Length: 346
Image 1 (cartoon, rainbow, N blue to C red):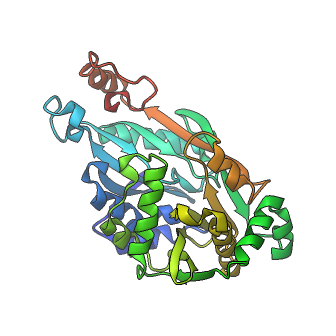
Image 2: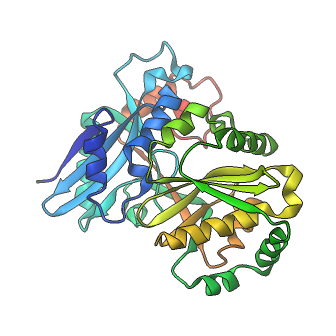
Image 3: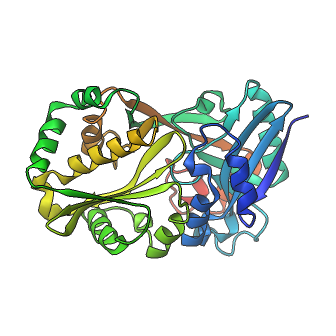
């Protein structure tokens, strides 16, 4: 018989023990990751680990369950505890496991959502499994991500970089740059100085200005977090936070001091991360995408992995159409953004 069991963030040891029973688990499923986002912004909702079991088949999923009554745009229009929606954590998610009967999983999950008053969900699909292909909601890809495979010898990887990357790294080396690799927040203030200035420069949304406490919470993933800092004459000029599991490393957050762009410290930084990740026995370094669809940032990343372009899929599903339409109706006279999902939050 198929079923779904919920695990909550107040039992992190149990949560993480379950995650680690899955070979090649993704770092985004660990409890400290979701916990950091819950504490950063309470309206993110409550993170839940869902364990699907049906005979020998098992799969896990992590979702934030959000009380729709807490949405400011619906304030006073909906009672608390009546309607909820789901969203996967920032990064990559969806069901992960050993599944052959996807129809049974989808049916079991839909029944679970209906029973728990989950009106709809938004999914950011993982790059390395095919759940998106079996998803029974709407699926689309708006952009691509770049993945640097680490499974070739380093000298071959060097030649696989575009020529301008090799040139930039050689130029960076003429400045005698140093690298600090650490799993602590010893240089957090330098990291934030550069990260915040990078967000300012790119006109980033306010939700990406994560607080100091957010990083302290993320750092609780002691065996899954590493900071890389490029140093020139005693000053940190480029920096990156990398999170990793037992197979993949992810370029997560970071930036470069614009005053030192001409030294090409970011190319130097990325190469140091790649060497470290390969030395750790990891299989892939996920560089992510751009700020928009396949923009200049994306094209820069592709220079590090010319054959590493992956489709990034998102998914949307309405479980309770009647309630969804009712919620949209509560804001029908407000000029909603039809491209946003769920529409009642636009």
